[in-house]
Amino acid sequence: MNFLAHLFLSGNDENLMIGNFIADSIRGSAFNNYEHGIKNGILLHRFIDSYTDAHPVYLQSVNRLRPRYKKYAGVIMDIFYDYFLAINWQQYSPIPLAEYTVQVHRTLLQHKNKMPTHSQLFLQYMVKYNVPMVYATHSGIAQVLKGMAHRARFKSDMEHATTELKLYQPEMQIEFTLFFADMIKAANGFIERKKIGG
Image 1 (tube, one colour):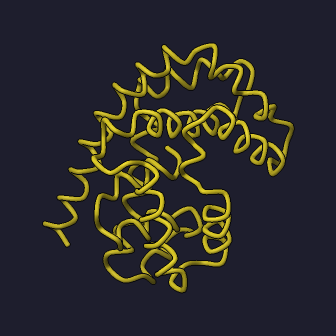
Image 2: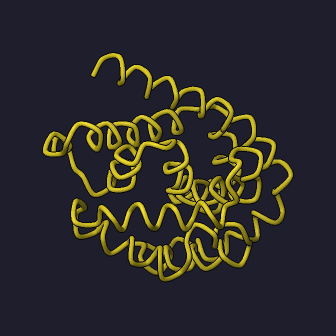
């Protein structure tokens, strides 16, 4: 999953959200350097990634892209699944996506000093380009994929992947809906176990 889903799955817990947001910048056991709530957010992020990568419905989506995009298929599908979350947002949250975006920006900016430099830079990008609102359109997804293709170490063709999004959108929508119902239950279960176990 990409960052919109990660933030959503953090619920209303600001520390979980912060940890989830910075997790990709935290290597190995360095999560132990953070306060309890943020640490659990980093662990939640890792749990979400592991659960997603092993889920058969997600893998079905990824395998549709693999012939053309190879090792980048999962990266692209993470973006696509955030797109499906964005366009179906009203099914998952009573707060409109535009309002949620403002709240997320405000929360993360308030805790910017707790973040690694890379996360701070990405937060600046988020605010400047009104992410995650941009994820709710094909043009926004195209913009994101173009930027990722530019940063990729090898030729990826990611900038062309909206072709497959348009072509397979009905099938991918069904797959996302099935997957995300399971993902919500799994993430909530993880959060509850952390509350009980500390």
